[in-house]
Length: 236
Picture 1 (cartoon, rainbow, N blue to C red):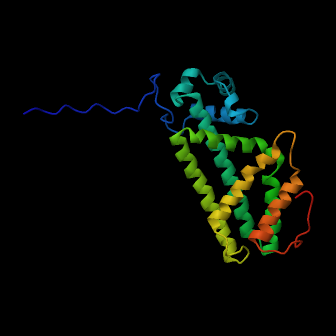
Picture 2 (picture 1 turned 135 degrees about the horizontal axis):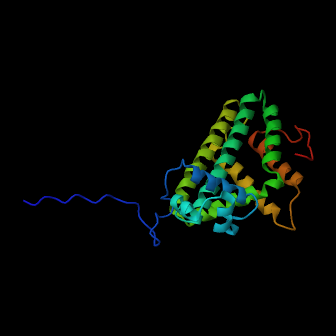
Picture 3 (picture 1 turned 180 degrees about the vertical axis):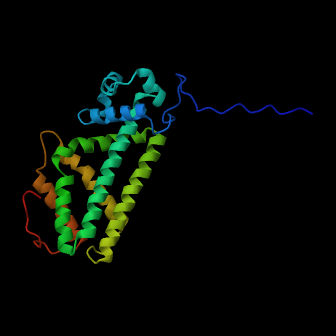
């Protein structure tokens, strides 16, 4: 009777360079990993993802090349992780702001006034680079199945949170019952990303026109307020 040979220990799949494949890096909590992600986030504030080089990351982080490849299979994996974290932080901030508004507002008018403030802040032309990073993340996810799955999970978190807030507004009769909460949540995200179209260099749409359009969609379309209920403000 032959005895079965013990199975060899499984190892993470390797790429052509003998390193773990993309997104098969070490655990998430590690000082070196954190330093690399912080450096990537700092560089993304002023550079497009495609313009970030290995040397720039190493200089900004103070981490050696070997240590970087110990944490990430390649530079793109690090940038993907930084873009996801950047998006995640933006998601959490947006959810917190709207949740606070919904909880504090005492009337439909108060909610509409608060949402104007959120619109003015979230649609600020100065946030163009943040929108570009999100667009870049979406494009990169189309080429990477694992990154796509992570982005879908994060996107679902945002959509579900916004849907719950819209449902809460509907329960108070502040938002029309005829609107699908999920569709409305998707629309909110779509116009935020779509602001990029109005920011094409040399042909920028004035913030007052863009924000006025959003206010009309929210107040008259979603909330059913008559036009002119709130005093128009050029800053909004």
